[in-house]
Length: 532
Image (cartoon, rainbow, N blue to C red; front, side):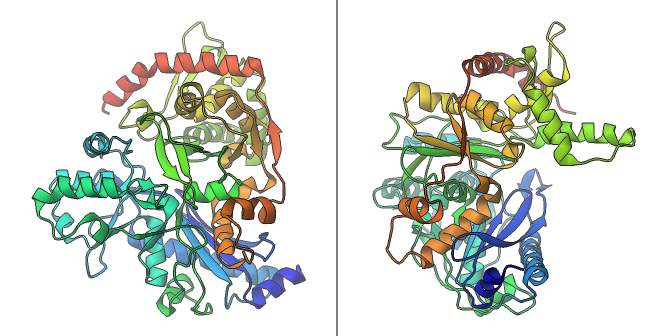
């Protein structure tokens, strides 16, 4: 038993980070040195209801409570104690989406997640109005689409927030949001570190003829930056989190953030000229900019770090889900042969074998579109594997094509940043499921964006750890360091991870692959248009 960890928990000095991911809700408890000492999790999945991807309110609360109960159980097993109090708490979740409530705090329509692509008309109109790229999944796109659709609930909106903002509100009573997550509701001004006054005014003028009795700032959460107090756990909030009743109220809670923000923190990528790539169910890259881009790009979202620096984000709806489905086929085949299955071994063998494939995958192309992909302009997904009779069809090329596909769309967006905008970066760090097999996903990503990629040992800790670090920053920063310096000096202490640089052959091969990929997008489009 770790006596120091037990003492930290018993004395109420442990810090809790919780993150609602697409497939798992995860909780990480850290000590005063910012090291994980216990974890909990809950598996869940979204539902397609009336054509929209959602999670029910019941599933949200059951998932949170089950995740926390799993953490309690693990603490009990590891240290033979209960969690009674904590030094701080932080909550993060999938960015963006739409959660609208009336004055009775009742949700007006089911939570509309980032995954929905039904907001094209609104996003296009707002992008033109703001002269700024407004993505399909942003809260303002969902709100304006609901207005364009004449949805009755809009007139009743009293509060509009994200999933992280909702959980935080329910456990603290505070209608606030961290600046990183807020920048995915409506653009944030990096100077004022709150919603762009110009865009708020433009939106209010746009909808004025509708005669709603609210203006935009009336219904949006207050914006806070990392390190600002965002309230305290209320007695009701403590019961909602810990149904066993052991957890005491009064714990400080830091500003809630989106999963992109926690990924930046977990990879020490909040300083300008740094970046990170998160690659799991979806993928996104975040490059912290020294200055604004020369013009808006439809493929690039402008968001901020948790302390308000401007970030160019390329967000892809699809990453490893289709790849995982193919790996599961090989698992089934192994089971048919009566061979015991170790999934880490299956992934390791297949991924490492992929590196023996041709750098251009022998002409094979895969589209991993489980859902629509806005970057390539497709509203729906049809996973598709494409080859010609003359292509080199073998297992290594097959697996490599799927690994390339997992970051193919990401490459298309990042080519704009590096080739057209000439953005300079000192370090890019990878994290997420794609990097679990050492060296493979890292090498593929390095080839895709023609840049060295670092992976840290802590990369597997991911978002909930990043959220716990933001909570730690709230209460364990006596010198008042800026967030980037706090991470550099206190948390990571100079550790930059293991770096892999791209080889010329891999870069040339990936470029050839992506040419084939773009040339054959019409096949994917035809598959999407073919209703079955």
